[in-house]
Length: 465
Ligand code: PEP
Ligand code: MN
Image 1 (tube, protein in one colour):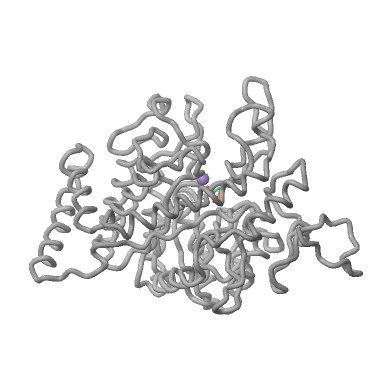
Image 2: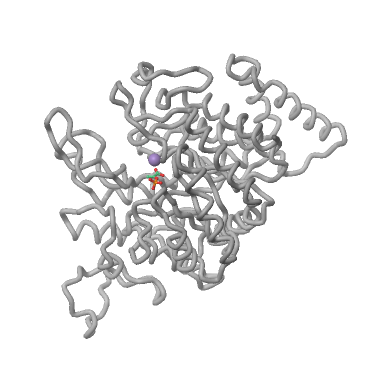
């Protein structure tokens, strides 16, 4: 790799990283010197440099112009003219990059989006937690099983899920694997969504199958037949816009491992501005949103639309400081606050944040993550969430926005298109004892296919109430 020239200010003990991408982006070493939280401790720095070097020259996964388009769509959310549906796995895995898995996830997102579009009567901006969601922050650096303690699994981007000493050693080559798997996933997403799979009639047919053929779905027959009538009407008048045959699904993930996000931050040749070309949208997690931290610093420099998770410990001043640092020009669409309070806290916790942000005139989209504040350990030992708590948090989110006269901009959900058993409750009444049947998440519990569709119909009822 090319080393920067040694000047006075560079005579330090910093590792020798490749030259920084642009003067406006801090180099990796200075980001690390800010005390970046939740980073892997790599045993071999030379191997890290080699992986970073490879990533720096890899082609972009997304184009800056696509990021700008998403930003425009989120600006419509800020104005109350669109709704966001952001969803996918808590943690993608390399083994999960199969056509079936990606297709099922896409299908459920598209199905949910049609229901929500009809109910909200506004466009639904579709964003996957997909094609890059491989790095996980952990509440503990270690994990103990049967008296054995090993480093925690930090996502396939960092180490292996297998509970062995060997597999838990952080391996920087995995960052290159993240890039390759993200490229393969995104290629499939683009092919499915533009190649006829996202056809509105087709998606609606899947919804009617769910409604007609499952006991859980039957509750929603009325809404499904209203959508049917709307589609039939459109057909009858000969309306057949391009939008009926394709969908835009954008990629997103938590920007966590600095090596990866920094290496994929590039100067757009059109605008000369820096973009993180690893995804259309990236977000900062609850554990890495320190105002003086490396993640806020790096994301403050890129032009993509970005999100920040806000948990119950967030003060109104924290939210203001984040908005000022991350969106100094107060550009609508640039910043999304993803709140994750928990069902029992959202009704009290959310209003002070919204009120202060409104009072300061700051442009943000508010979206509700009803998953991360509602996690608990079931008696069977599995990490789970209750479907009722998830729905209750969404209801709280809508109630708070209705009371304040602000726009509930969307949902951020951990889900899968498969029939897993990870969250309890829902129309199928999954119990704690059912969790062992098909618990496949390597991190947090996801809504399964039926629970996800139910959520869409229940939220549709909230929206039309
Ligand atoms: C996540 O989205 O998987 C996550 C870790 O969320 P949070 O940062 O809100 O805890
Ligand atoms: Mn999660």
